[in-house]
Length: 116
Length: 110
Image (cartoon, rainbow over all chains, first blue to last red; front, top):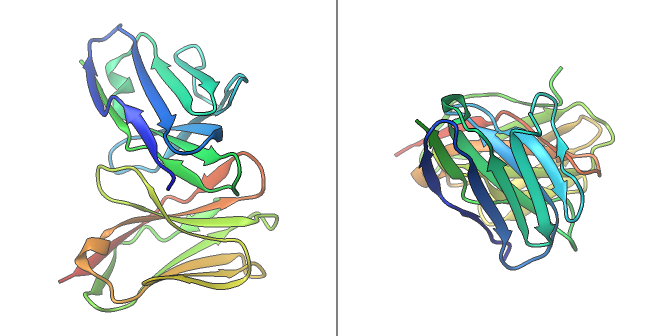
């Protein structure tokens, strides 16, 4: 299989605090991981692409100092939302691409962030 | 012109019918094509991928690719209410980024 996990599945935090979301590929090595955000009834929005051991590439309009991405190994990437505000409340989803396959992406179950 | 275009729907079909979902893309250099299913409140799930012109079948699902027309489709045979979801078409040129369409909502009536 190609299983991707995310933790936590949901989190509530206070405005101004930081939240870290973990994304793990459980049964394969991921050369590339992606972070998306999705607001209710809207399309997936790619935030950034990360490769193991390299700096993430952020999409236009995504603040790299606010959304910190670390891809420490071939099975783990983290997204830290710093100084969260209510407008950051969203569904954050990671996906991973296998090292030995084509360009298929496998998505994690997502993390629902609510900032109060 | 959007890079990957899908009709937003909703597409409504009766149970047991064939659902036909369509997608067009703008980049002629695209090489890999994917269909994802996303249930409400959940993350996308990969259900099909296709790289060559023609048809690819997997169970009740058939993906069809026509590179000359820049068109990819997904057929769902014997549609079930559990197939009701948003279907995302995705296209990759051979680089890091896969481009996703906005999705087509499918509703299968029991």
